[in-house]
Length: 210
Image (cartoon, rainbow, N blue to C red; front, side, top):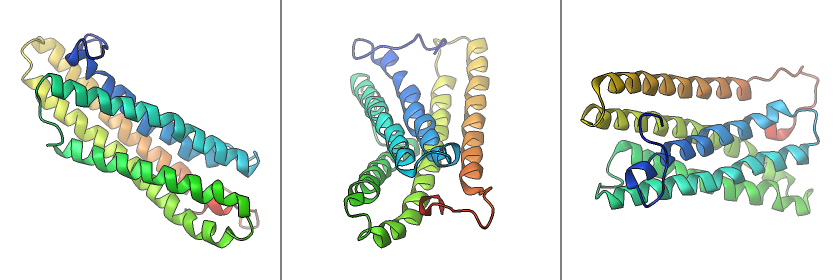
């Protein structure tokens, strides 16, 4: 944000846009990534606590995503830029929709249904691989959306005459480094959540079967 003048809200639409990448990455990748890894990081805790922490991280991600969406939508309207025209915006729309769907289904399937734990066990067990696989797919959709957003912004930066050629070059390197980092995070999270280091005789929670 050093090259973009910081943050603002509606009083400065150009600076308001700067909130969009920060909040979206924080919500969809950082918080969601931690939420996915909770089942690997907190294996010694009671399973219900792990579920609650998992839901908490996703719940905290919701306001980040909502504010990130509002910031870019308001900024584009104020600057009279088109919305939902690029691959980045379409992927973002799909990612947000899947995220909300996953949260609602997960909340009702794995928390509300615990009120009748024995009667709903088979239903919850059947939902686990679907929920887990879609969650990981949604995480990768978020990574893809972020990378396409970086590419889109990179194209705009190349045409930005307010930046010096030196600053454009530096920002180009920073953008590329961020993109590579996001992909590496996706790979690490996927490897960590797919890898099971428990012995064959150990008890494995059904929610860990992906």
